Image (cartoon, rainbow, N blue to C red; front, side, top):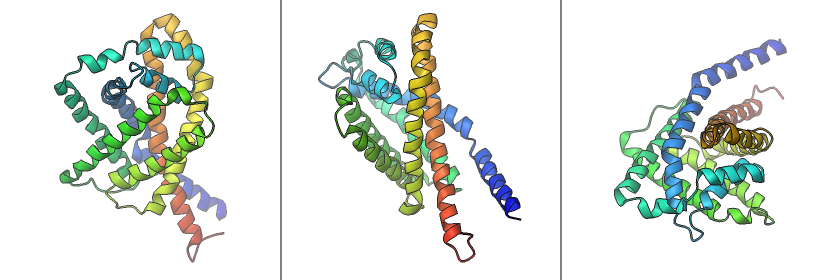
Length: 259
């Protein structure tokens, strides 16, 4: 009887995963992130005093790759400081507008995780606020990348990451889900990103070095695109794991829960 109940729960969990369309959403996350968010962050990071090298350093730090792979990433984003001088106000505004679609896509994924209807059109201001905070967080991370080995930076990064994903879910869902229900998803997302960083160190790092030799800069782009797909899986999958964990806690705490 107990095994049958567990199989039924596993079946429901698998059904939710299929309904979420995790792989398709992750592909959209990677494509939209590379086309809209990455150019915007390159332009923003180009404003720092070190000539705009912060984005490439942040990207290498985020992947956790070897020094050889970092060189290939920095070569791919060579001369980023020119982005700030050559980008017009119209171009920057256009990047920001396209960047808002990234928030829309993320909100749609979170709503699917929690089986919520889409928000009203007038709630799009949340995407503006979310994008501004995201750019600010990543910019600070980019300009402080040279101090990634400083004591305590890892703890601060994890804490900020958990707070950001916790707040992002609450904001993009319009406050329709309690804070307590969203915390497990934020923690699961950061744990997933930590695991992805280890995977990147073991797999993506040698791939970047070998692909750069075989395919040139295009090979590095392919690996980075795959990494973005992995981030999409972690972001949406982490939110789903958080919901399942929250529901399991509620079930066990209920009057008829099994302990």
